[in-house]
Length: 285
Image (cartoon, rainbow, N blue to C red; front, side, top):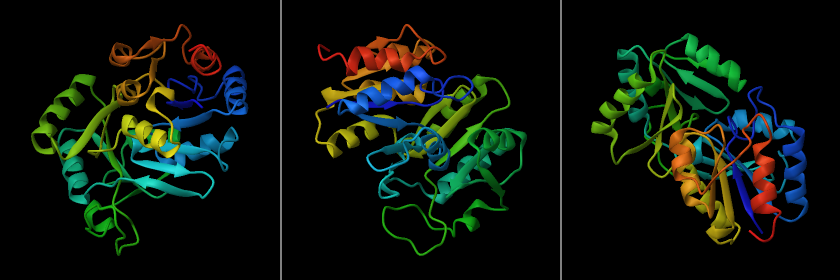
């Protein structure tokens, strides 16, 4: 059995945020042959569930990797099988530092995007994710001031899973911000670009590569039987972790640099079908 992990934006989804008919047919063919398909994204769970439901994957037998591996969701039980949270104080620190530099920052609570400031970046992001947002005075009060942990907590709103920083400036502004934040967050938080304008901070063990390894263990399959496909820096951990790591034709230089294979077709021309035919359905590979 092969396990196929696919990023969404820029990979499985075309630029209109749809899955092509060819890719859908290929996915159904691999599932029919006994293989597993796992959407693996930096998007929040609410957003990826919308997509999974639209295309018929929000049902028993399917799992969704969201928040760059911060939450893995069982569509059958409708419950997470893995959640990694971060301290509210860490989120507050990043939000404050981002705001000082004129950048937007937000986190999540259930089906909501949470921020301390209502910005154009917040509105645009929520429109794209099809999520509502709430603006609060102090993020620490909203989450009850309880630091993240893996056990039960006595507050209604559980600690966040990740925090996103979006810059209205050049990409270099976020590169500089990342460098500055690492003087404080190194060894405490994992940071990664999901887009040139978006930097994400999460639990040290939250990344797509860790999610691939977790799901391979879950299915009792060797890592050699995994294929991971992506296009951005946040996909690099799973491209490197998988038995076969694939970068899309439209991928960033960082993703292509760590891939075993780069597709000939991009996300607008059914690149996932190319991957499935070459590495999943072709038993010689």
